[in-house]
Image 1: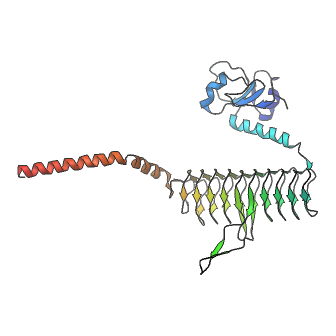
Image 2: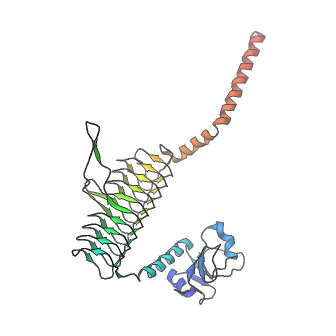
Image 3: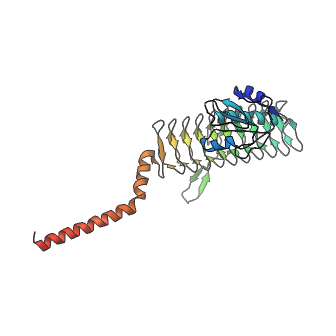
Length: 352
């Protein structure tokens, strides 16, 4: 597919500088892009490449001042990174719109209800009483269990498993290998030291505009629902336990783990490999640094923590600075002790 600079500027509501007839058919990084490709400049670290790139079109911030002439046709927008993302989304949408119909072999229960333009890839399984709304794409080797509801314009990538009774809203994007609705980790200890499994009879509810990364697992609730609220974004390889609630527009980076019944507020940011214990609450806007171990509730909105166990972000950084200086501090203490001993000996000699 080819696009002209004029078409792109209209799509992004941008200001065009250069030839409106310049065409591109693919995308490229600014330091590697070739003729016929579109690129963007958002990070000042890559500014030098704007003047050497061979890209045909470049998206830049509207306030950026050129130091000298550039080769590509420019499209100025309020935020280059957001504009480029918008363009990629449109391109992906155009590509996936071509996917329609039911590929064979696949199994679709007679009681399942799929909108006319739904795409189902080969070797997929769709169980009893499943409802799939318009525009949704279910890629090959996916499993959709009984009584699952999937909203409009969702993307269920290859190998996704959605267990029975789970509910997905509109514009949900679930990447390859993710498991939605597997049993929560519930086992009751017995007097003989063994563990008895507690049946997990709840479900998972994923609201609108949520993205779930590859190989992420979200456990079903023991009772009620594990809930991922509107606009939340989960990276790859994340574990969300039973009865957890993830708030609106919260983002969680890869390899993080959230234990059962923890409630995470809105607009929270959780770094990679962070761990949250169960039955705590995380206030709106909180920031949890990578590899932090959060063992108690964060009740103050927009607070930040780091470390394991996690503590106040600023205080923890001060402590880390002191820790790095411990060898030097130890040396100074030893020198002071030696000086004190010397002064004491001199006082004894002088008879004081």
